[in-house]
Every structure is written in C-alpha cells, then in structure tokens.
Image (cartoon, rainbow, N blue to C red; front, side, top):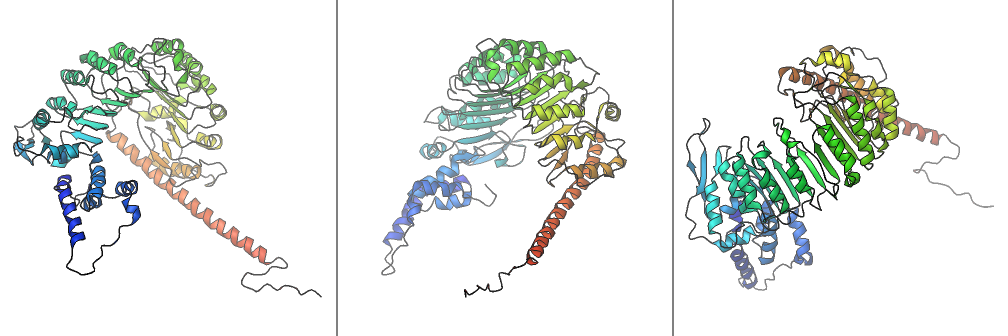
Length: 604
C-alpha cells in the first residue's frame, strides 16, 4: 500500500451501507425521465472474474470497488485484507492508536503505542469480519506502520484485545502464514494470539540476547495449536539448551510438518530424534543468519534406521564421524536430493574421501551438494585440498550444484575440469572455497601460493557449458597484460555470476583481468561479485576488503564494456551478412524484385 492509498480502516467504514444506498439511489432516481442505468457487462457479474481483476489491481482500486455494491465489496475486501504487512490496520478498527513515551533504553527514547480509547464499547462484529479475511500477516514490534524504528506497538495492547475478543483465542482465525520479528522479550508471549488452527507457515526471528525462558514459554503455549503446520523457520542466537525440551515437545504436535529451518547448533539428539519421527518431513535446513559461538551440544547428529522416511533435503551439522555413521546406517537417506554437510572440525584428506565415498553410495540421486569443512572448535589446517577427495561424487551424475567451503583454497587442474564435465553434464553452480578461512589476514600470499591461475577459466568455458554461477579463489596478482582474442570460440554462454570471494587483485591487474573476463563472457548481464559464505570469519567491513572489492568492480566495468561491444559487433555482422545475401540473391539469373510485376510467359 502506497502513501497516497487509503488505509484499511478508511476503506472499511460503513462499506456495505454506502454501497447499498448508492445502488438504491441509482435505481430509484427519477429526476431524469427515461433514465436507464448503464448495463453491467456480464463478465463483471462472475465472481471468479471479479476476483482475478481485484487480485491484479492496486489497493486504491480495490478500495473504490468495495464501495460499488455488496458483491463487489465482499470480493474487494477479501483481497484487500488477505495479505497484511502489519496488524495495525486491524487494531485501529477497534480504536485509534496513540504514542505513550517510555523511559530511555540503551540511550534512546521509545514511544509505546497503545489504544487511545477503552475496548469495552467497540464493534467486535466489525473487527471479526475483517479479521477472518486475513490469510498472511507480518507481526513486528517495531512496526513501520506507526513511524520510525523507535515507535513500538505495545504488547499490552495486544494482550487486552486477546482477553476481550469474544470469538475465540486467535485474533485472525483463518490465518495461514505468520511471520514474526520480535525485539522485546515481553512481546514474545503475544505471538500465540495470531496463531490459528489453519496456520501452515510460521517464521519467527528474535533479537540478539532473547532470553531462553521467553522462548520456552512460547513453545509451551503453541503445543496443540499448530496441528496443520507445514513450514517452520526459526532465527535466534539463544542457545538451544535453554529450551530444548519445550521445542522438542512442540515438534511432536506438528505431525504434518514438511519443512523445518533451525539455527546453527540446534541438531541435538532430542530435536533430531523428534523430527525424525515426523512422517511428512521433506526438508531439514540450517539458518545461517546468526553467527553463534560453537556449541558441542548441538552437533550430535545421529539417526535411527527408520528416521526421516520422506526426507529429500538435509542439512547435517556435526563432526565427520557422526555424518559418516549417519550415511552408513540410515537407508532412508537414499531419497536425498539436496544435502548440506557442515563439519566444525578441520578434517584430513582421508576423512573427506571416506565421507564423499559414503555419500555417493548412500545418496545416488543427489542434485545439490554443499560441503562445509570449516573449523569452529579451535582446530585448523594449513593443507590445501585437492579435487581427488571429491572424485567419488562424480558417480552422482544428476548433480547441478556443487559448493565447497574450507579453511584453505582448493587446488584444481584442467584434468579435474574434464572429469567434472563428464560426470556432471548438467552442472550449473560451482563454488569452490572462494572465501578460505586461513588464519593469516594477508590473502595476497595465500593467492600466490594456492590460488587458481585465472587462465583456467578458458578451459572451464570450453568444458562446463551450462555454468550460471562460478565461484573461485583466484590468483591474478601477476596478470597485468592481456593480448588475447576478445571473441574466442568458447565462452560462458549462460554465466550470470562470477564470484571471486576474497580473491585479492592489484591495481595493475584490473585492466588485464577486465579484458580477459570480458572475452570469456557472452552476455553483458554477467556480473562479478565478492560474496562470502555464512561460515566466513573475516570482517566484511574491513577497509582492505572494501578497497579490494572496489578494484574488482572496476574490472567488472571493463568486462561489461567488452561484452556489450561484442554484442553490438555481432548484431552489425549479422546485418551485413543479411545484406550480402540479399545482394547475392539479386545477382542471380531470373531474379525479380517483389516491387516489379512478374510477367507470365504466354503459351504459343
């Protein structure tokens, strides 16, 4: 809803009365003799057609349509209230909200918004008529609908509404998707007021330092209220040990759950054991938006033989011995198509080889493979990895996405690329340790010693024809001169993103690198980025990183100029070729232009 659009409460005031009165006045108007109301097109009397029109309309159009007649009003309001970015418009149906200044917190003054009037003489029927239309709701304490970040919806206001609401314990009975962003611990207990019996998607994120007792009380209150829940997302930095039992107990009450996304270090024996019993669960993923300290308690991933009967997407957190035992002892994992394995202890090459061998054997239908061999428990490694340890995965011929994270760069030869092209013919995403977590802050020396020579990209363009995303840790320090062909026969035809991670680039190498990359990119839509995986421990705001990204951006600018010039040249060449063919056709004997009359010989 834009700023000039009317608010929901403005639209909803006496809509039915206004529409009926307008219709009666139109039909009974006798001031003009012989007046005949314009006929309504038959298509606009069909509810399904009207619904499609309102779905494609703006909020202001729906607001106007809601005042036309009773039929239009019902459908327009259904669409207008279906997806709500805030509960504020619904609460303002009861009473206007006004700010009440609260004491300073963390050096800032907050305004606590509450009802201006009491709730003992309000129209609950009207409130209920709009509340039942809501299907999707975003609930924030710092709600943008009431101004700046320091304006907060009072949790006490919601508590009073929940207590006085005469139509049940859920304020939005038909809600199907709820997304909560809570920053106050006292507001956590207001979330159940928006949890209805038809809720299918629940996504919750909590501020840093949220007490475990608050989350414990929340999940205890949600037990038996989410029986048809389908998708669950949780983002928090609260250690799982503080409310593990309550969370596991709540999962037992979600028998239809198909997707679960949990924070790092939440794969405890109790939680994984409970989730493994859910017969419909297809995806168990990890949320990486919080950098939590290493927690040994949350990485014991072990499964029973009959766990996860329908699982296809799996994130495993734990040491390699746990992951290896899981792959060897869980026959249900043969259905896995997407796997993300994170080991928080630096592995040896033999450990990785044993794991990939077991992975290829246990999960032959793999499509997406993410292997994060990072050290979080104090261990580290200074040995660069080679593709040899990943070779068993080439037996999984359906792989389209392969990502490796490691403390050290990955060494790659042209023969390895040849094997990838043969074993993974449909490979689209290839990200290989573009952001190594080496203890040294100087990535320049690391690139010179272990970084891939940028010239290997030409061989990749020839062999890996379907790549759309490529991420490598490159050595471009000495690549200061380019005299090659700007339009070689083999180029990345489908490339969208070239991710160089934390690869260092010097000022002297920018021009040569830009020209070389421009020669290999077929589309001007291709982009260079310096992204980091969530497990990267470096500081993205470091001045060195910012300066390095600035030099890569200059290389991208030059690369983009080259690709655009190639595109213009190709179009010009095509036009010249077409003109040449026309001229050749004109010079053929018997050629007649379409503008000239064709003469037909008269038979003798």
